[in-house]
Image (cartoon, rainbow, N blue to C red; front, side, top):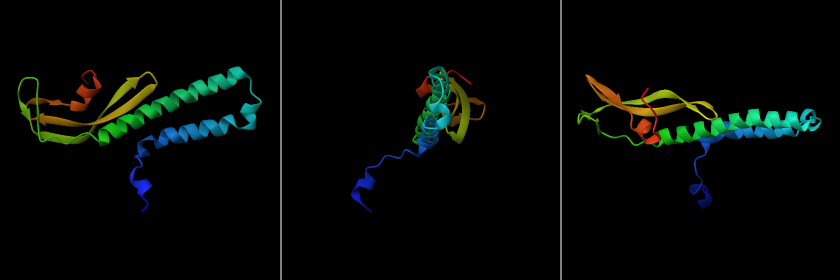
Length: 127
């Protein structure tokens, strides 16, 4: 394997956004949009551009979730050590660009509420 491949960042989390951009460019090059009025083109770019932005945010959150460290325990606000870890919990998040899904780890203990370090890091309100 060549050395330059070792320095490549994993951008697979952004593949849906890349596909969206490719489709937008393809449509902007189409005969249909070439003959469209500027208002129609602006509306197309605005609508599909917001989807592109939403997909970029979703990709960022996906990469962040993938890199979330696995902790053996976390301490709750009331000082209880939470040792049970659930992977792949998720919640919806409304953003400026539309709804996205936040995947994160959950830490809990019987009779104690779960704690989500990713939610705290992203400054999300309680579920």
